[in-house]
Length: 327
Image (cartoon, rainbow, N blue to C red; front, top):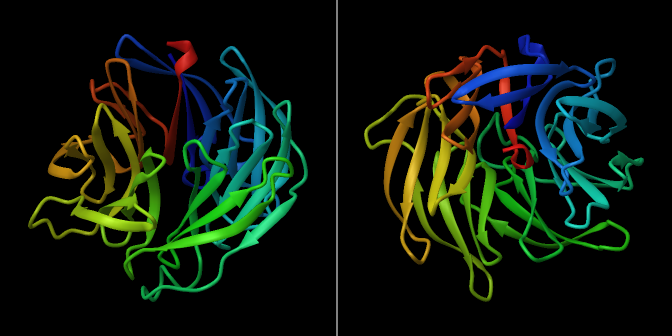
């Protein structure tokens, strides 16, 4: 199967990589460096377009790009400025007509129209305000992820800097966002990424406190349970990163402990016991479940490493996006 990687060019990485996973081995087909530090890439819902976020090579401004996919090749079709700094995550509307980007350093959300995979000029920039208790990581807002609540037009945005999950209502006709509510997280948590179990339940991992929380909606969002993503007694420096649900288990990557935390869930979604899988590299930023194994993207040492032991040397690897149409 084919998969895509995003890599920090500032760490010597190739930018966007087009890779193959076959018979337990990893191979690199092509690389593309149209934007710097492509920290996140996603496939469009129709699997014809790859969207990426990063920064412009000449100015360092936040950028979003789109590519037409033709076999194992990518063809750049558009690049747009996000209006923010350090664009780090993105989400496509269900109808494929709009794209939303989280700008980490400036703490904002950008909105773009999309026509046949091509990004139009930005139509909105939603700016967050505030700060959190951490003196260096929460001196201002830092949007880290945007994701749609299943079955709705609500965009959920994790803001690490202000300990909030901001909720926006998306106008499906215009693509514009309007503030709806905010879900307050514990001070100093630094919410990084969340994953929905269904429209009324999600799990969110705290980058700064290394605690994952189970949030439910019963006439209002509330934290129903929480659990550390680190083994009891471990005292090293760590920041949690990606979070995913797979086969009724919850998984979170640990940068520092360099592991994948696996949490058992009961029938109601309550978090039970945890175990840990060492990823084989340094600073596992992202991971993906693929047929026959797990792929880990290591930001510092190891590149892309598979649970089979196969590896692809790729500096600054931070994102993995499988293409399930190629299995």
